[in-house]
Image (cartoon, rainbow over all chains, first blue to last red; front, side, top):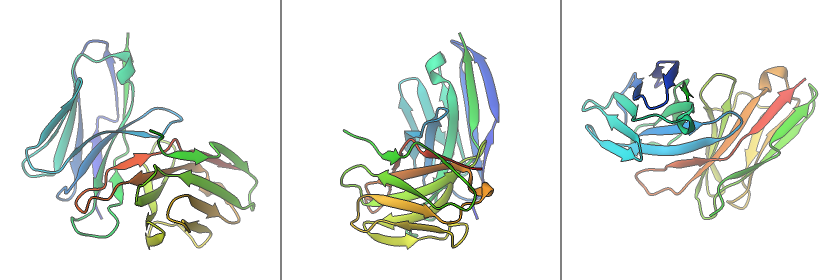
Length: 114
Length: 115
């Protein structure tokens, strides 16, 4: 079965600083999803990556999938208190398989100090 | 437009009680997923529907867990004879299956506490 390891487990940064969160898979990634979760709330979809070397950006958040499709990174530029929360990476199963259920990492808890 | 909604948001049950958790997916979404999230962990897959068909229930932890989606829209996750280990947040997600990807949009979850 596929396992996703996220690092770091938690992160505290000063407002305005850049940061990077990593997600490493035990198997080739066919679809890699990044979500953000605040306490007591559901997961908010951020971005999805499929192709090796792919990079996507939304506002101050950039996600990349490496060429070998086994690692993804999420980079936040000039962090703000609104970026605080738990960031989760999720991967779906083999392309063409049944349900596209997602396997998630344990999450990275981000705190941003004003 | 409206997102995925779940009810109740919080449920406290005594051990041995039956509970029913409801999910209203985004209108028109074909796929519907249920996940269980323990404290400090990522969500874990329970079951998957495509319209009204339950295509994958490999993640259901025991036969006390049952899910249905009879008309291909609203879904209910039922847990019979609840145990303390069932305490978790239950998340529902829906998606518009494209044949290649199925980005899942999550509801706020139902936090179940079994005493």
